[in-house]
Length: 100
Image (tube, rainbow, N blue to C red; front, top):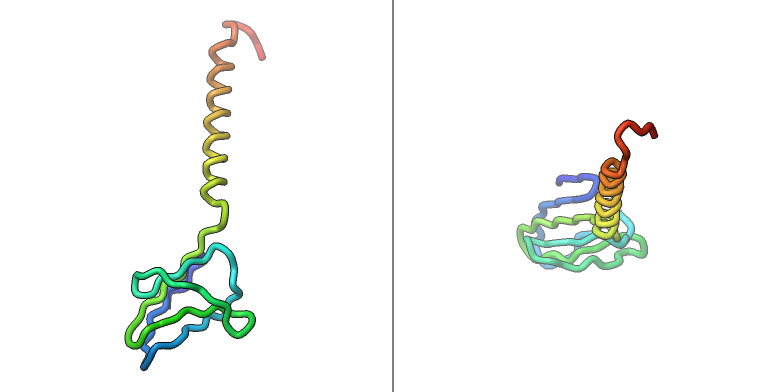
């Protein structure tokens, strides 16, 4: 098992098809793959998360990507570029010898 802040990887062997129940609440932003194939997260036992697993050896990987991460990065990069452009324009419009 490899448990990180934004991901979890679990290797398991089952004697038949079943469910892996993870002691964490269902939250937006998590995705799961089972043996490299996208899977579905389902509510389990009223407060936990379940993932269907096939018979045999499986590697279950859960990855968290915060909703809005892409939009937040885009807004931040755009803001930084605009700030740099404004600073550059202000430096080009300054009269030599003028104190500001």
